[in-house]
Image (cartoon, rainbow, N blue to C red):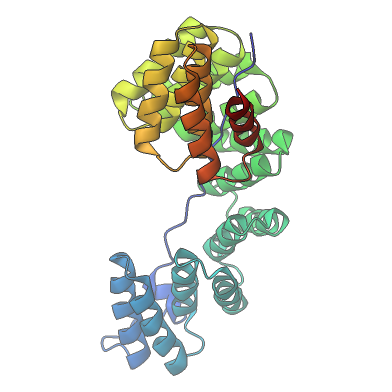
Length: 319
């Protein structure tokens, strides 16, 4: 059977920002100074997701007190949320200069480097954070996720294994390690990890999707369908579950079912070019060239660089 493509979605967890006592060197003032007032108002805007207004208040706090560690860290985090990664890194670097032993600051900067695709810098920051706080499970998880992005699966597995040693009931660590095993083609180990993740968190739809993909890669299509279907029961809007199940239905020649799944995935994400290619191929297999051409054409509209869609569109236009 044709090996089904797998998609790994990696989520980097942002750490809670450091406590107010850390901001000004541990001072506990009954009447906070002006810088602290601006900082606390900025923190309120940040908690509401109003990043731009928060940045204005953090900037004023920094003007009044350039050594305000948390104003720098919070402004850096806010910049990261607005996509201004250079400014975010500058602020977090300044916060680290002021408080170099704070593991969370290194982790925050590591998150920003990850989002910028600078994985070596991210690994360096998470490694320093681990040195400072070696029992922090999430630090090992985040570094493991970056190792996975770099396709260094051995290092990723080592970090997730350490996270499991520190917290044997951490479902996400098992799921992440399972994904790394899948990426190495170790599907038995992957399925064992996904199964343990499900035992620990039976309502986690993504773990069922991950296990379904591993079953698909092992050619266990019936088990894959069961897992994808359970994921959909738990989360009817899980696009990956519909895609996975649609691919299995296509592989088994169940084209009506495949079309239904791809159509639902398109409803959830109508701007995904690859989904139209998958549905177009199912229409093609059903002998529906007009519908196939319409899907391939839409795929090219959404992504002119999708070469598979372009080739298929040109083939059907000549027929």
